[in-house]
Length: 153
View 1 (cartoon, rainbow, N blue to C red):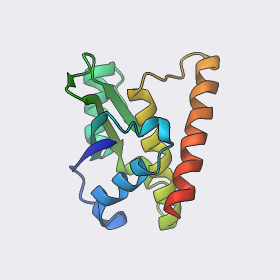
View 2 (view 1 turned 60 degrees about the vertical axis):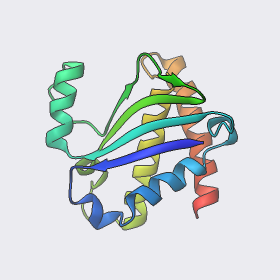
View 3 (view 1 turned 90 degrees about the horizontal axis):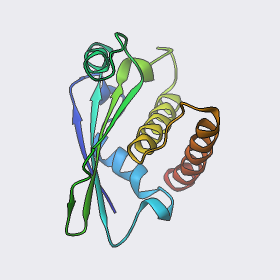
């Protein structure tokens, strides 16, 4: 089971996704079984942000002075309490998701789902620095996405 806390510091998210907590929890519930470990609670925090704030975080923690679509901060020590495991934090920029501005709502949500999955895999240790790692991560993203789309549509 994945326990998810959703926070928002950008009001425009509410214009596109009315029930944010429900939306993201539905995505997590639709993940393939290997990510919904029944005897262990995985937890993470999701911050719905914007370009201005994500740029500050990217500069502070990655020394990159630019905005980006998603940042993931895996929790280094992986807090293990009883049967719980805190994975870390994901931050998604509204401005990146809302491009182009004239896209329909389904395309917006689709982008958000893919970006959230990407951030989640980073929390699990996936990366795309080397091409072989990129291929592995991309394949896993695709598998999770297919599972989610089947269940939430």
